[in-house]
Amino acid sequence: MAQGQIRKALSGYYYVYHEGELIQCRGRGVFRNRGEAPLVGDIVDYTKEGESDGYIMKIYPRFNELVRPPIANVDQALLVFSVKEPDFSTLLLDRFLVVLESYRVKPIICLTKMDLLEDEELAGLQKYIEDYRKIGYMVIDTFKNDETLLKSLHPILQGKTSVLAGQSGVGKSTLLNTLIPELQLKTNDISQSLGRGKHTTRHVELIDIGNGLLADTPGFSSFDFDTIEKEELTYCFPEIASISENCKFRGCLHLKEPKCAVKDAVDQGEVTQYRYEHYLEFLQEISDRKPRY
Ligand SMILES: Nc1nc2c(ncn2[C@@H]2O[C@H](COP(=O)(O)OP(=O)(O)OP(=O)(O)O)[C@@H](O)[C@H]2O)c(=O)[nH]1
Ligand SMILES: [Zn+2]
Image 1 (cartoon, protein in one colour):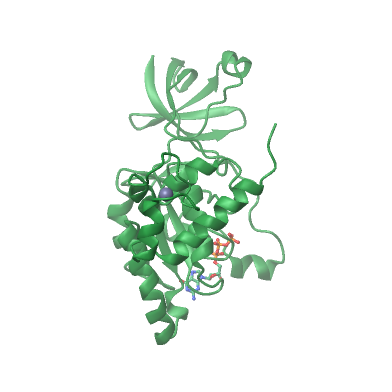
Image 2 (tube, rainbow, N blue to C red):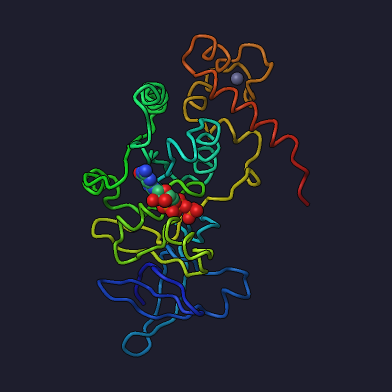
C-alpha cells in the first residue's frame, strides 16, 4: 500500500500521482456503497496491481471540497476580476470573496484589463485596492500581454493547489493559457468568431506547473449562498470576523443588537461602509432563502 494524490479523473479511472508517476486506479466498490466518491485532489492509499494499475483503498479526510470544479483540498483561488468590461464592482467582488471564504479557499484578487482604464478611473480604483489590501487580501493587477505576470504569480502559486475563479469574460481562459501554455483554451475572441460555445465538457485535472498545482478548469462562475448560514456570514468577512469578538452578544449578527463592536467599527471607518452594507444585503438574502428539506 502506498499514498498518493488523485490528479485526474477520466472514464471511471483515477490517476494517482506518486513519486513522479501516474498510476491508473479504480475506486473500490465499497466507496460507491457508502456514497463516497474519490475526487481529484484527494490524498489516497492505493495498492498496485501490475505495472501501472491499481485500486484506491482509502480516501483521507478532506480540507475542503469544491463542487465546480469538483476538486478536494484546494488551498487558494485566483479570483479573476476585470476592472472594465465587465466593470469593477465591489458588490460582486464581495460576493465571490464570501463564497470562497465559506469554502475555506484563500482568495487572491487578480485584477485584469488594467490597460482599459483611463487615468482618473485608475485613481478611483486605487482606493478600493487599498481597502482590500488593508483587510489582508492580496491584490495583484495585470493587463493585456503582461510579460511580468508569470514572475509575479510564481511565488504565489508555490507549493499550493490553486483554482481560477471569476465571472464570464473577465479573462480566466486568457490567464490559464498564460499559466499552462499547453492548454490552448479558446478565449472569447476566438469562440465568438467560430460561433459556438467554447467550454466543451472536459474532465478536471490538476496540472503540475512546476512549483504548484493548478486546476485546468475555472470554477465558481455561477454561485450563490446556498450552503452559507446566517451565523457563518460574519466569518466570511475577515475584518468583521475579528472585530466581532468584541460584540457584547455571542452570535451577534451586527444588525440592531446593543454594544455591537462591528457597528461601532463602521461608524469609526475601520470597516468600510460598503463592505458592511454588502454584509447586510447578503444576510437578508440568506434570511429570505426558502428552507431546504
Ligand atoms: N484589454 C484586455 N483584454 C483582455 C485582458 N484579459 C483578457 N482580455 C480579453 O477579454 C475577453 C474575455 O477573455 P477570456 O479569457 O475569454 O475570459 P473568461 O473569463 O475565460 O470568460 P468565460 O470563458 O466566458 O468565463 C477576451 O476578448 C480577451 O482577449 C486584459 O488584461 N486586457
Ligand atoms: Zn455585532
